[in-house]
Amino acid sequence: MLDSKLHEYDAVIVGAGGAGLMAALYASTGGARVAVVSKLYPTRSHTGAALGGIGAALGNLEEDDPLWHAYDTVKGGDYLTDQNAAQVLAENAVDAVVELEHMGLPFDRTSAGRISQRRFGGHTRNFGESPVRRACHSADRTGHMILQTLYQQCIKQEVAFFDEFYVVDLVMNGETVGGCVALELGSGDWHIFHAKATLFATGGWGRVWSFTSNAHSLTGDGAALPLRRGLPLQDMEFYQFHPTGLYGLGVLLTEGIRGEGGVLLNGQGERFMERYAPTIKDLASRDVVSRAIYLELRDGKGVRGRDYVHLDVRPSTVNRHLAEAGEERRIDEAYIIQNLAETLDTCRTYVGVDPLKEPMPVRPTAHYAMGGIPTNLCAEVTRDAAHTVVPGFFAAGEVACVSCHGANRLGTNSLVDLIVFGRLGGKRIAEVCAGSDLPPIAKDAAAEAQAAFAQLRASQGNSRPGELRQRLQETMMQNVGVFRTAETMQQALDELAELRDRYEKDLHIDDRGQRFNSDVMEAWELGCLLDLAEATARSALARRESRGAHSREDFPERDDQNWLVHSLISRDGDQLTLRHDKAVDFSLWEEEKARGIAEDEQHFKPRPRVY
Ligand SMILES: Cc1cc2nc3c(=O)[nH]c(=O)nc-3n(C[C@H](O)[C@H](O)[C@H](O)COP(=O)(O)OP(=O)(O)OC[C@H]3O[C@@H](n4cnc5c(N)ncnc54)[C@H](O)[C@@H]3O)c2cc1C
Image 1 (cartoon, helix red, strand yellow):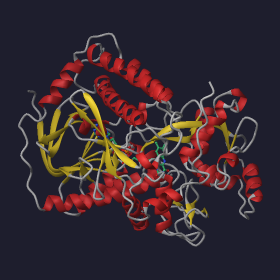
Image 2 (cartoon, protein in one colour; image 1 turned 30 degrees about the horizontal axis):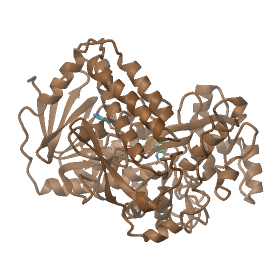
Image 3 (cartoon, protein in one colour; image 1 turned 45 degrees about the vertical axis):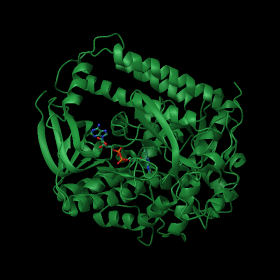
């Protein structure tokens, strides 16, 4: 056994994005001694890339109500959303946003000095009647502002930060979590964080797919670790593809562009969303718009015969459509420059397109994990359909699945999720820590992880991690993407099995050193990607219906009779096993009503594959 440094805290928070920082802030103001462990420098977390806004029914520009927000969240989630979670999300969003404002977050303002709000996909007034301005924003760099604001607050609160530390294992004592094991990038030293409460806020796993909006670091480590320790992951089949990734790169172009009046056009210059969602058009929910783009591309209606469509936010186009819709509002170049500054910069820098003068080339990009570590409303991790709590273990943010997003997340609801459930988790941690002692843990808690790394570092086969990762991403993009069939998913699973075999027996590592060994760390992250890709494909293959982001061409209908239920996948030895016995919460609207209101334009069937 190698030496490892032991740190004792009341609470250890893994991840320094919005969820981790909010949880750290609340746990520490509640009296707990808190450490935040993060593989990135905190302000590099992906939350900083969030653009368009954070949803809250403030009603600053148009009448709004948290209940309408909850309804949109349930409907957007294709009824798999736990309604109690949607209610908590929507109700808490209002004062969470005001709290951020009071912490100093520089939101954009209305002329009356209140927080400005813009439209976003699926945000409606009065239960779907018409679009509403609900997204609070700070230009198109809202996430950046949230992250900076929360980081400052944590520093003020004297939270201890361990930056560029990779958490590589959970410390468990029977069923209880007693902390985590981390590897320090700069030195290669081992650390054990022993704590009464451990909260995972490690973000998503967009890097499972080849075309993604997600940062390089989003490899889902925090979801893979509990899976390896026998805990379940929930609803893994539901992964969101955002309709507007910048062609060729996957970099995200915010839904705020369409919120400001931007429209999608196919290669024939047609505003095709009018055919797919006649009422809400370009602002239909993301799964609907992503599928529509795919279908246009399949019909050969891409721009110049290529696999992208156009997103047009030129003032002349926007004003024409606003006039057609009978709206009084008009925009000009100065308005776009002020409200979509990041978008202009991204397009000009990366693809040489100036959105003020020409339309932007876009196609769907892998974006957001609705599934993850199951939790209750206080961010406590649960292990089964009966919501049994795993003592000492918490999760919040994208890695968690409190199921406020169901089968498909609405735009701006992730930032709300981070703030609301990060805060509730932090509060609960403070309570738990006040009334308990450190749980006993084994002295050699790091031994298993150390052995695994020793093996990884010594790998002398022929397969380079980069090559295996690329194949994994390509097969997932092609076979477990926007549209899926049993055949394609099985093909992905077969390829994943082969890649895992090569990963375990034939890996090649160049750098065997201890300090800043990113070669080994990326190889380790690849192991997490493999686990998550398999969990996703297996969960998707088992769900024989189409719902939200999970769209099967061989089962194109939503099947509420058999599948209005969560899935739980867990590892049993070498096998992944699935259960479908966890009920959806229907405490706001009864099941029958939820089913009835779903039968509208938003739920259209994918057409059969034509190639
Ligand atoms: C380009 C883009 C734009 C977006 N725009 C919006 C938007 O406008 N509105 C909205 O609501 N949502 C948006 N989203 C989604 C939203 O930003 C994310 O879901 C959210 O920020 C995730 O936050 P998080 O706190 O869960 O994790 P992240 O912010 O991703 O942070 C993860 C943290 O975990 C740490 N970590 C990970 N693995 C380890 C490990 N093994 N050991 C130690 N630390 C680890 C990382 O260092 C990091 O600090 C956007 C997402 C993207 C990619």
